[in-house]
Image (cartoon, rainbow, N blue to C red; front, side, top):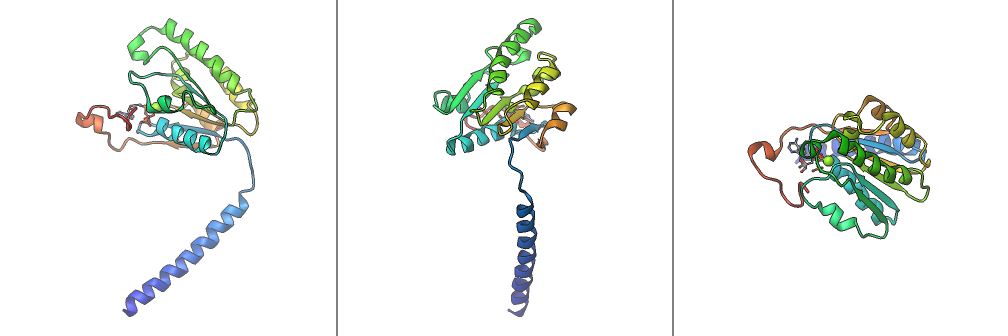
Length: 202
Ligand code: ATP
Ligand code: MG
């Protein structure tokens, strides 16, 4: 009994110290600005995190734009949910996975065409959040000019948030970003032979 009382007291003191620390950190964070977030790494959770932020933003009535640079074989739940939403402008690059098209010339043409939507969204002050899903591949494959993309990101409206996803984010993109998460692949069901699951994978 006495032991559990003293443990409870120690816990209470630890939580009081933690609260003072957290409250202090919150009070120090006074800057309000549009963020560039980069979600990269080999683990699952990059695009689904970006679409989680889309759902949050739409929930708050914010105007959002989505540009998906690689389209999978399956109709994604996020596209089905948001494509006709009045707060969301949704563009999907018409091609498919680059390992399916196997045609660099047509991939470049599609990437450049799709970038026009991104570029327009990135210069529109009324758009609060822009998601550039699988953008990193356009840069690693050299489908889009890196300087052009970085300049458009740097010159966007100062309160606009951007989320860029994809593996192997370039050093420049990481340097420019305010928040970067590198998602590690600890384990993935696919490696154990499990096929893609609706709602989880697409
Ligand atoms: P998600 O859209 O599920 O958040 P992601 O954006 O992090 O995934 P991508 O590389 O874009 O990952 O891959 C998209 C698809 O591949 C999803 O169906 C996802 O479940 C699957 N996937 C993601 N990471 C892995 C992995 N490490 N091994 C196998 N499949 C993966
Ligand atoms: Mg993805």
